[in-house]
Image 1 (tube, rainbow, N blue to C red):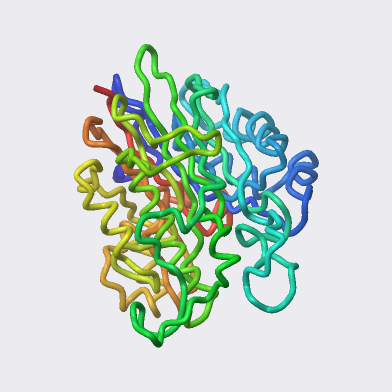
Image 2 (image 1 turned 135 degrees about the vertical axis):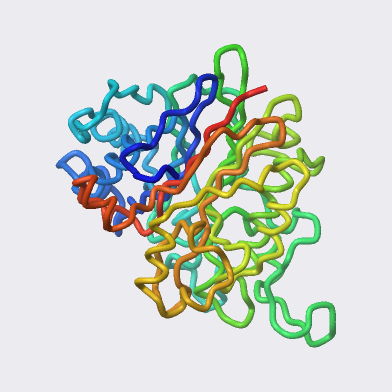
Length: 387
């Protein structure tokens, strides 16, 4: 990141800026987000100010409640594309003309007793944890045309169909003492993705890039069976297999395969997994970062993350990862700040810049923007050139 946040340079000629941002625009009830956006949502204005400051060309927004796309459209038209949100800019705002939204598993009833409490009700018996259908959804915004008809979604892919699926349970795995957490009936129907996994092709002139989007479940809020830890691990493995176009993949329309090997890709999302810190299983995120298909040597950073680690102390001082790479500002007792949001391009793309939008206290004062509580995550971006 440049020495002062006010000097974030635009992408170099021939590059496009691609970002991920968990906006934390999830609400407690169905329709609440849309109602708030239409009335004038203070948090959404702060989120939009951040987006406009960094000005990505393609943006994955996590935790925007899905209602068929209406809330996502209002967020785009009345906030992200509203030049009055952020007036301190040198060039006219380039609006997002395109968006991609699709259903997610959160809050969608499974009609199964997934948590084994003898009842079929509540957020833990949904295909993905949520109190109403679409909670914690996601949306892709783009300044470039989206090939909607070519997009692939894997919302309904079954967990059991993932090769070497890490089935939750207690005891020593592979021994007689091991006991599966889910019944056979539930396991044979359980969906893998807590929200969804997407492959969304975008046209950049006469070229094409594929956005691989996901938001795996947090690897916490469970018990000794580690059901969320197992699911987070396998959702990230699934993302890796989508990138490598594994033969076993079948999307929601019955089409085989994952990302096309013909076009470059960028993996985007709040993956809820830090490569070195936190309580999750690091094997899947490390596998993804070490994949020969993925560039991971360039790690987006900020000075604000390092400053926050020193100021907030507690768990942050015990971590092994570089705090400049942190993207989530979490409870300082446990787990502390983590690197959980990722922009990972394929090898054929040339990285020309990037960063994490995490201002220092001095930078915030210079910005004259009240954005401190916009989200507990920070926007992450990379600038890339297509081959």
